[in-house]
Amino acid sequence: MKNVLKFAFGIGLIAIIVVIFFQTNESSSSDYTTRVYPVNSGFGYEISIHNKVLIKQDNIPAIQNEIPFCNEDNANTIASLVVSKLENKIAPTISKAELKENKIILNCLN
Image: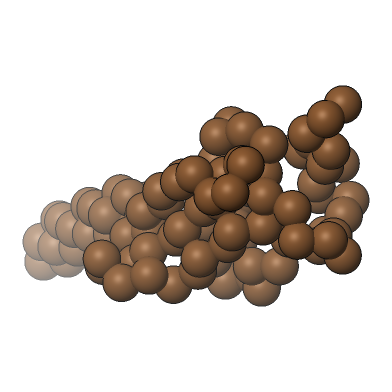
């Protein structure tokens, strides 16, 4: 009888581990999509979830002037940072420090 209980316990434990593994793998794929697009003399980005636009950012956030990103890479970098925050249930705001950390160009003429 003890062997049957040990066997049942072992099977149950394995089943729980398998369920947790598959749930973790499913949640690792993002439901968010990003798109970088041209605006005026620069670039902006859009973040969607399930094909619905959640954020549309035509200008670099956290700075006073309404200036678009100088290049697609900068827009994509910040869009990815915002998605990461959303996935981790953190407010998707961007600070000047984060712009500096990510080497975002604030003046396209320089």
